[in-house]
Image (tube, rainbow, N blue to C red):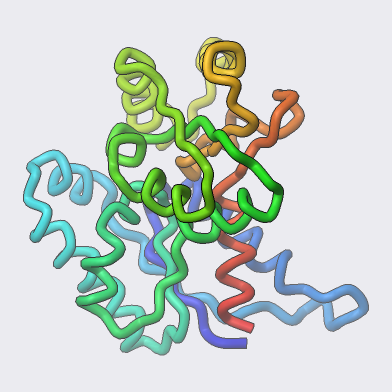
Length: 230
């Protein structure tokens, strides 16, 4: 298996999930239970990344992330991944700045949705993720419509992700509001699926909570990373 390089820390909570899922996903039934994939993790300073992002200097942000990817490549990584949805808004530019092959969480989720025959998905995530063109553009290639929450709900999601979920805090009222958002769009927009487009959201909502398909982008991404590394 190829050496996997992860840009982590976006957040530490989700990075731990990536590590655990990669280890468990790589173990084959009947195989050596001690055999693990080789994983390099560069855990960045999330406060620094958020400051750059909110400053609006796109070029500086791309250079910052590309530098980390190159450090992973020089350390021996052969397959790379960003452990969050939001920085995938810059994926095309990052691919131009590094020779480390990158596995896209958006493309992997699109393929998973297409394989299940889904047609209309509600996207939940940070404001950057929800308002970027990456999900609508890629999902349109598979004939899948993307539905976005209203502005008030987008603000709630963004504040909750950065202010609570990134710190490992999950309040019952937050979980209930997320479920209410989903229920509202199930009735209003006839969605057949929900994209958990933030790697912290599976800490709050799971497929057991809804009667429609729930696309856990973290799990989907891990499967794609392992496939690329095999």
